Amino acid sequence: RRARAPMAVSLVVDTSGSMAGDKIQNARMAAASLLENLADGDIVSIYGFSNQVTEFAPPTVVSASSRGPLMQRIQQLYASGGTNLHGGMQAGISRMGQAPGSHPVRRVFLISDGHANIGPSDPHSLSNLAAGATEFGTQITGIGVGLSYDQATLSAMVVRSSGRLYHLAQPHQMASILQEEMSLLSQSVAVNAYIEVIPAPGVRILEGATTGAVLENGRLRLPLGQVYAGQHREVLFRAQVDTRREGSQPLAHARLVY
Image (cartoon, rainbow, N blue to C red; front, top):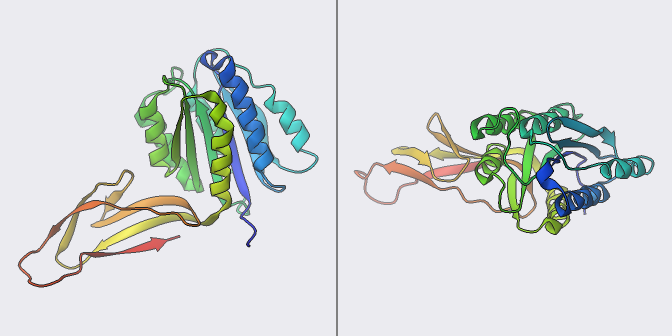
């Protein structure tokens, strides 16, 4: 057994009016579950966004003395107003940019049930914001609650940051999803990882068919971010092959960079 790497995480919760009732109550429970799953020495920050962005907890080192006050701040999450998704994510991501190098596993957890309607709200702007998080080695875990959330926008944000997206039909599933994500993060064996596919002579890669794959200088690159033990990924792409040469020929070789 090996000790896991220290984590820096930011929880960004939609506290708009549509989250009132069971949704915000379960968001509080999910935040408490997240805090319980963090180890002493990890760093956590908590934000809520409605018309404005509220910092419920600045980056705080988790310890026996800080857990109680953090739990109390979680109970202050309440629902009212509009949906300033861009502002909330900007706050969480900027805090990840300030995380010390001693905490290489970095994640922003986003919980939302609706469409952004305050500030930049289009998928392009929000996905570009998420992509910028990768400069700090940060990925986004998106949790879309109910049936009305903007799946296209959350999906674009997650893909651009090499993160993961969950769709919750019932709010009570939030805590279990966060526990699952924390379990995967605790098994991280590499950070800032990507797969690079290099074509063999006579082969030209035309495009990547796997979401998130990018073709650069004839090579296909698929960002992975944090890689956990036992993770399996497939990379699909279209290629043009010189068929004038007979016999078996290599197509490409792939390497994992981290």
